[in-house]
Length: 360
Image (cartoon, rainbow, N blue to C red):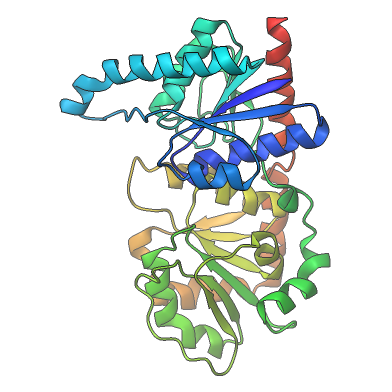
């Protein structure tokens, strides 16, 4: 089976696609993967790093307001559809799988014109424009969050094998040694996505000594620009700051509680590994981060705090209060794990195989 993946733009679009690709290849070595994306996008680095060929087309942004760019959209889409059509004619895939983003609409239209089965996966709680358009062209639609797209199959998020197979308790000693943390202290994990989060950095650095005075150690991914981060002393209870955490599986294993943004992949991974979390959604866009976290919070696996309300007082009261409540932490961890889906890649792969078979 040959699969053409249409993805690009943000890690939230790219990572699920590559996780699906890894699963498909791991379960059938004869599977061929080709990715369509942008030459200037994040996919230009991430896709080759995972060992897959990348075919590029120009991006087609979808303006949300009337503008010159909106007038140019039909021409740009037509040109990009032609380019993807040429790639499809050359690669001859059995199925096209799209994850939204700027390259998605041309791929969806080109697949429909070529008679190639199309599968669409929506990662966020609120579907983007590209996937809402694409859903009209296929009956094979999947969602990570229930209710994001009408008629979609709830499959969860395709996750990395390191997350799917993580046993937090069994890995904890190794993980704490890896980060230079005390093996016996309560541990708080703080991260704001690949670029860090200014609000989290500001608040946590201001509250650092209060947290340490409570005997809680911290592993904090602050982003390469360390935006908003104040000075933190290097004496006493460990407070480890890293620009970026390569081994998120080990980071999840060290933690008793996480404080994080609420990107779709973050919410899916935290729930899957059963790690209770305080979610502080990014306060921009269409509010999708708060919606991403809503199901696991409703299930009892996390708390939601608005960005502006995340202050040192909240850290001292809510976060430290939770960290010292064993019964509540255990209950939240069980609830998160019950809601979380670890086999999202397998579920989506089943749909992809089904769609490919429908053509035959």
